[in-house]
Image (cartoon, rainbow over all chains, first blue to last red; front, side, top):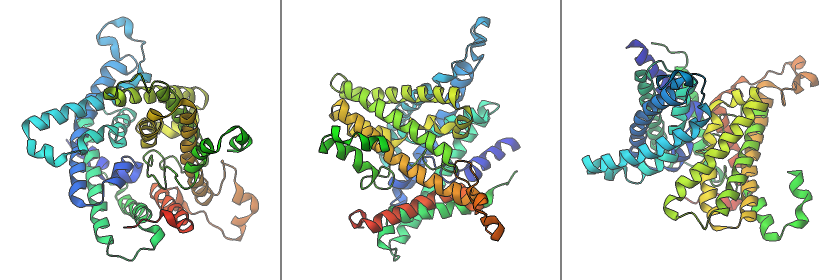
Length: 205
Length: 218
């Protein structure tokens, strides 16, 4: 349990998707004009990451990893399909997004209409594929840890995009130099937020 | 980029524009805001930035050509899946080549080679240009856009390595000049991830103050 809390805190604050690895930057910059839409996107990312990371964990450990196919037959012990992981992961993500979209539409039309266009767009969000690739690189011990990592990364993204949207709403009333307005100042604010997030470094529970 | 200049006479003015525009006034990173995701994390040193730039040039130009060749035979309904498969195939090839011939750098780049797949520049150019244009133009467009992306990557990588560790391509420039003896210190802050964002912010600032057309109206 302690271990899981630790992974959660790490993935939200220390290894934050946006500030430490610059993942999901495109949608982070494009959709952070108002708080309402950015929270919508953030929730959708949490949702999809929490589902795709464990699914990809299973695929990696039971299909692609070196020696992962031994549950089929002893003779597959030397087979390493690791080079297929990119294409498998992106296929899983695209189909999971489609699936999640259909499920939400059926059971909660209200949530569906508030997420709107963001759900399909998520398939090409780097944060989602990045979550799966980091899960492989960090070699989580079991599916529970992988799920918590996916959920935590999503929450970190939600936190970052909601924060920058709130700041951008306020900064409209400030006197920013004209060439820096819009994109430039957003980059610099993100840098400053990243520096603030670095103060969490080294925290361990 | 010197090779592009040598071959200039062969190109028509329109094709040349495809190559030149993304390098300056229509740069994918600073103007179109595409492909920042995998760009910034690799720029702490110059060498990984250069390798990353080359990989993106290869992936984008070849997949642009492939998609453009098949643009008439792929039904629009499945085009996204088709594009993803082409990109993923190219990225797998690049990844395997890097692992074989430049293992050190491939370790440094870690997951970011894989993240070229979801790099918005590539999807954006395939969808926006290659689906509607002939292979040769798509090739030039791919090279141009990826070079514009690589240009920013290399500028950021140069400044971060030079100011942060006092080296260029690992060669200790500042040490050789002798600046340390008169009390110069490396700015370790430049190596940290957030400074990549601030550096790009400053590049955007400089570019927009020189070219007023790009300034945000809002």
